[in-house]
Length: 113
Length: 114
Image (cartoon, rainbow over all chains, first blue to last red; front, side, top):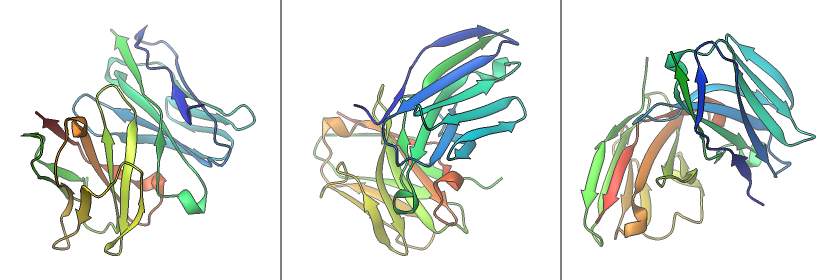
């Protein structure tokens, strides 16, 4: 079983839509759950992260972690054309593995005006 | 805003040649990383570096790879004898205190081995 799975899409939505992006994982040792945004020809940029379970909200973005299901989500409300990018989930374990990220494949999102 | 800078943005090299990818981390950062992304595949961890030594390396980071911080500002990745399968985007990242949640990534160097 792959450590982190993410549907690569592509996902195409109209402007203003709510976008739901998801990842599943198999390693129960993961404690940190990150979402990165990557524009074409750029490096990954951290959007937000969650430690352990729960929700975290930052403006139009909400990250959710369900450790019992090994499932994480990123919701984008009122999506904008500028949100068009690839969204990557990444995860890391506890103190011993705190410096290594395990990545999903990334989901390509297009928000159409 | 401080940023991680990588040069060159694109490097084309012949199979068997040595390449050095360069990174300038954010100035007060102490932890440094290299990741790579083969086209169409996941980003993969290569190596982490702290206090002038490797902290952790992946199975990918074999004897043909090496890292160095030669002058206190640059952080380099050397591939001694490039193979076709080394073609990928290589990302450098740095963080101040080693937490994965605070790592900043450079824009990447696209390495093409022909």
